[in-house]
Length: 562
Image (cartoon, rainbow, N blue to C red; front, side, top):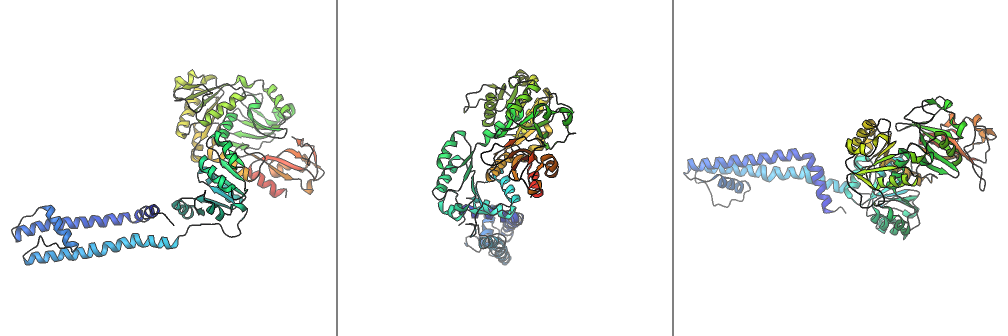
């Protein structure tokens, strides 16, 4: 049943907003009527009967007469007075005792009763439901996840303890949610968690632990939970969570890999066996302002260039793709290939300098990651972070020219804006870009709608909390090998179709057909995969192609190689 506060909120928040102008206008009319009658009462009493009353007494007399209470302590003794009193009484009966209640009932009470009889929240999933995803907690991340699930046609159910939120989601967004307390075992049984594909928890560490323990008392369905505090990860695993996602730590690491400008190992985004997937900014390398053919990266290093980032947009390159100064190439190869690349670029990570703006959990994670790879960094914040004592911080306003110059902004190669306020990050970007035109700027976007503004301000890469979190959860649900590779890129597999058996990768024209790039070939259990195969490698039907590409390329691949 809906709580009393919910009933009041509905009546005040929905019906009253709709008819508020009519209600205010009618009440104003009644007040004016009372005041006019009170003035007429004073006049008639004085000129007809020679008695003087105050205006307050007149208001009092009008109210008692209009409401038909009629105390009798103040009365007229003339015919004209009787007629006036009768008019006031009839006005009160008509406007106060008939029309006002009728208006309240028709405009407020009747719609509320109709709504009570019409709307019934979803209390359990339909009979026979299985293979669905249960999501506890709705925020921008899980909302983005819901969109991805809808696109893929994966059934899901949100469970929300707020009646009004359940109703709003259904009426405004067309999303049906189950009404109930997520930690209640009876609600979880009605959600058929034992037959669910996965359970996603995003309600805070304490609530997530409680729900995890309750689920584990019922079934062994996989549980993935977003983490607030890194030191709670082990507790959630002990409670029974299968995947614990320290989103802020992942964001910090991802920002750091994008901010460094030299040292290929500081750019490794992910790995698949011996295969390494890394990024390299073109600025300052021998490849700048050359086409992919002229750069001869594969011939010199053995690395395959599978993508080119240009201000947040990934492009699948061809031989004529220009590697501009501001571009970032995505390369795939072995550790030995990356070592060759470092020798070729001629600059190591310890020759770099990265500035980190903001010493929160994400800034701290970025600093720890850079420190692990021996990349020098400078942390700037208005105040110290009591939760992190391992890093030294420059205290000051990062929009100040003096602070930035003292922190060596002129020789910094990269900058990370990590604060939880997008407007502040925009100011940091503008100030830094003004002082160092070639600095590589990576910014955190807290709201999806601010991504474009951050790019306009001068950021080279913008990492969205929402999209990163949703991508991680989606990849967990799809059992991807890579939890999170990059926004817009991930690893996927496809068996070799019979039509390609015995042919070379080049002759199959796989890249031209599907858009994806083959980065490895699996040959069966116990056999080492062929990493970064050459275009002349012969493929057979017992192999599995491992691709890197965008979600659109994956869909195209599955359609054309089916």
